[in-house]
Image 1 (tube, helix red, strand yellow):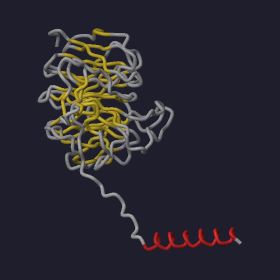
Image 2 (cartoon, one colour):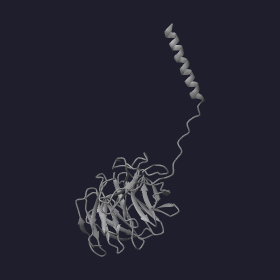
Image 3 (cartoon, rainbow, N blue to C red):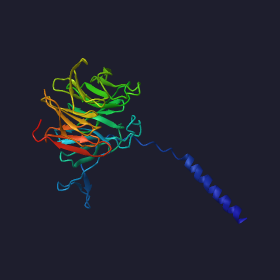
Image 4 (cartoon, one colour):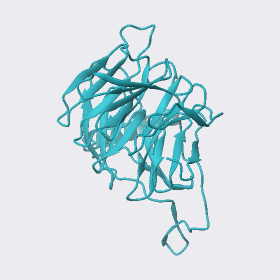
Amino acid sequence: MRTKTVLASTLATLLTAGAAFAQAPAQQPAQPQPFRAGTPLSQTNEAGQLKTMSSNVKVYGSFHFAESCTFDPDRNVIVAMNAANPRDMGSPPPLTPNDGFASLINPDGSVHTSKWIGVTRDGLTLVHPLGSAIQGGTLYVNDGNYIRTFDLKTGAPKQSFEVKEALNLNGIGVARDGTMYASNTGNATQPENKQRIYKVTPAGVSSVFIDGAPLNLPNGVAVDPQGNVVVVNIGSNDVQTFDTTGKLVKTEHAKEAGNDGLVVLPDGTKYVSSVRFGSVSKIAPGKEAEVIAEGIPSAASMCYDSKQNQLVIPMNPNNALAFIPLNGRR
């Protein structure tokens, strides 16, 4: 009899709780928060004061599959693009999760801001960023078949331009007027994965700029001082210069093939990094290429630090950056 009384009491309690739960208002979904960029390395002390890391401390790292970098001369920092999750090197990255990020790195390689873009995901889509470039106060980033743009001062997202026919945009160069040129490296054994350079206008209208030959697995892209589009290829050591109509006007040669990174200086000197063979070639105007550095694992899409006169090279799965001082050489 006592057992029945206990069961009845328990059932009544559950029914009462269920009725109360049913009458409670449904929990509202979390509201999206405004975009927020990360801040320089800091910590709150015991007194509750936020203290920026003192200058006698150096922290290195903050990379995860860093593919490209670009240099911000106004703040004197290197912007390194990172894919937060591992990815299959032989295929396009997955569309989710949304976890790519950008780090700010000091010229000596120490960390300024561990996660600048990507500290939160509010108002941000950045999956697996590859090539990047800076032009006119804007950071341009290739992300799958999108080119995403960010305010260089605040890190806030600006516009995203879809290139519908592309599968995985790789290198990018941006002209002074904001016209974007991006490579789809493609795959020689997959006809649907085209070896192309795409052109995207500042208004976001995309078109095929170069389709197939003479491209040979195109990778790094840059715009030279004359406004021409320069391309390096993984499949050959060709360094190809096209005018704005897409006509090939010059072919130079790096010392080795398998090329990824490309830097073009104001005087026309080109530096080319080989992701397959680990060398950096210098091509001075009118001269043959010379190797200025070698043995660099996975030397990817490099950038030029114009204030310290050095090349900076992300090393993909090594989660590191390589620094090459040019010591007055241009």
